[in-house]
Amino acid sequence: MVLPDDNLAALDVLDGAEKGFTLSVLDSSPDCIKLLEMDGRLSFMNSNGMCAMEIDNFADVAGAEWPVMWPKASHDALAHAMDEARDGRSRRFEAFCPTAKGTPRWWDVTVSPVRAPDGRVMRILACSRDVTDIVKARKLLQEQAAQLQAEVALKNEALARQKVLLGEIDHRVKNSFAAVIALLRMQARIHADVDAGALIGDAANRISTLSRVHEQLHLDPESGFVTLADYAAALTQDLGQALNAQVDFTDRLPRDLRVNPSQAAAIGQLLAELIGNAIKHGGKDRRTMIAVDLSAQDDRLTLRVMDDGPGLPDDFDPDSAAGLGMQICQIYAQQMGGALTFGASPMGGAAFDVDIQLDANSVGFA
Image: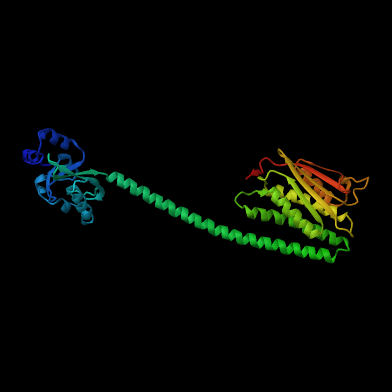
């Protein structure tokens, strides 16, 4: 690189009492520092700036119009910055400009006025800092962010399609449950005077409990849990309507208590069997009144079903009961670490209590 033949030319440009000090400061800067005349022609460039711009001889660019050294895409920004400097204001911008030898570079440029002792703008100072690495890193991050955003958009689209598909499946399953339950209950009414009718009705009630589990999961598919209070209330209402009985439901459960589908189905089967059993033995010529109560303490759930029927015989023993419903209740209670107890109801009929343990690994809270 050939420096100007005589630094005195630069010193003449840099008017002031400490010209030598000023020149040394400018040459020590890693930035490309240029002095422009008011018409935009280049009159000085520091040595490090010549290195950065890959200019071998200052004479090759001395007196050149500064914007000519830039691509046309940057000319408007340069012209605006010089106009601002002429009016006494500074301007900063970022632009692309290759070196004299064609090496691509990005520059952070600050254009400022140089004032005479009387305050008049006499020249323009342009300082360009090489920010190529920063710009490349920023562009890489932007590309990666755009790619990530595109991937997220694709995943969201796939999830949306999956949600629609699952919704359609859930709708079909729900309709299938409803059709099977309706068909079974119709057959139960047709054969109400024979034992088969009762068995068909029991099957309809058991399928109804599974349908309610499915519906509760559909309301909150992402959690994988069933809200126990809502599920039990809806199920008891369904059973009361289907079996033509008045079923009053109360609960003292935490509103955010949820159980997994397996325990929900088991609890539903217990409710269905006990309610069905109360109606079956409550008398054919009357509308049975039933009260269902659920309460929870720590990890224990207590389920009570009471009725206003004739009550239990003195020799009643659930272990020796021949009915399938009572056997199911016994099995579910034992599987869930609990027990089935019975006695007289304050309503005048029978009362059954089931105390079970909620699985700590399957209980969720909203």
